[in-house]
Image 1: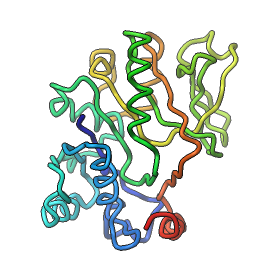
Image 2 (image 1 turned 120 degrees about the vertical axis):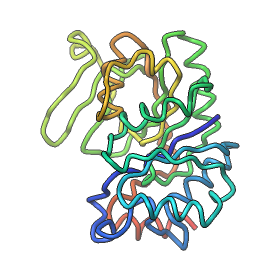
Image 3 (image 1 turned 135 degrees about the vertical axis):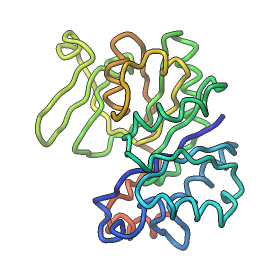
Length: 246
């Protein structure tokens, strides 16, 4: 399986570090977030990774070159001219995944000890249950400002901003049915049919793409609330990460 690490973001929450560096190179116990996640993928047997770059892209490319990809074959998806957000980044990387049945995508600023083998196994079960299966999203029960909403079958039906009250649904009837709110972990397995079902182009978020696609396809979830997950998007999160990840 191949993977993509989303490292093109501006990292505004991680200022002042990101005034001069990309967030993917923020350091936790002498290792950058990027190195940690490449090694995390290695432990699951993933040795082919594409990394999208935009903010201080030259620093990321140099770090990968200097470390020989930390033992992984790393390809760069260059978004220097325009950051494409998560969905646009995955769309730009489509040629890299042309011969893949499915692949893993994760944010560069996520640290976790989630069992990737379990995520892959659950995704296989979802695929066997429905030939319309497009993706499996890693989620937890943690408190979040935004939630993904899943029906009783564990399929994505909506999204909610808990701060503003804004809601998005895959269709009108979904809002009237029982649902469970989960926090997205920024990790997912995506299937090749995602590209065929996608109608977005250019700059867009994966969440918006999923909500559009979920009207006609199934998008499942994998709850790993029993594992450590840390969004290392703020300076104080870096300090906490240092206590959790050696």
